[in-house]
Image (tube, rainbow, N blue to C red; front, side, top):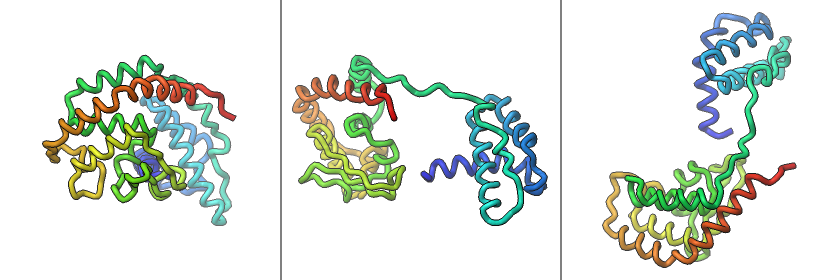
Amino acid sequence: MADSTRAMRRAIFDRDILPAWQNRLLKEITPDDLRALCAKVKERGAPATAIHARDIAKQIFGFAILNGEKVANPADDVGPASMATFAPKDRALSPVEIRIMLKQLEHVPTLPTIRLGLRLLLLTMVRKSELQDAVWDEVDFENALWSIPKERMKRSRPHNVYLSQQALDIMIALKTCAGNSRYLRRAMTPMRRCPALPSIASRQQSSCAPARKVFRSSRSLFMTCVAQAPHS
């Protein structure tokens, strides 16, 4: 489980579950109690939180039963579909929309290095946290390879990102701005000044212009096809 997911569930437990049940025994909590707790959460306009609360309760009781407690799991009689259903996320940006986004990115009032970071996310399709916590030791400039260790991957398996020329140019620009810091994100902090960046960004912009036209169509089409393809 990712640290962010663990922290989110801990917050739900502390805010919604513990205050309601802290003075009750496990054997005293019934499916109706769980249903009422989730309904209260849902009534404040948080159906996703209600489903998480139900799942957390299920895990708590499951752990207790696994360790010898003779109690029934109330979540077995409270299905998540009874609280909320969510439409699948099947919306994908079209090639035209991604092209517009990349053009408008140049007008966003932020650091040039942050713009490069956003482009790198699109070029590599890594998660935001995987870029944010990346260190330069993971990047092999000679072989154009970014090796993300399993400790930083959501599924706890190492992942290799093969860098295109555009992505490699962005990595070089960020490395130049990061100075002696071991973290990529150092290049994208407001405190960091990089007077060389305009010329670097300009060279990256001009040298990659033909490739970007191909990227805007093929890469966008790839992302759209992946998002819309049926999954088994």
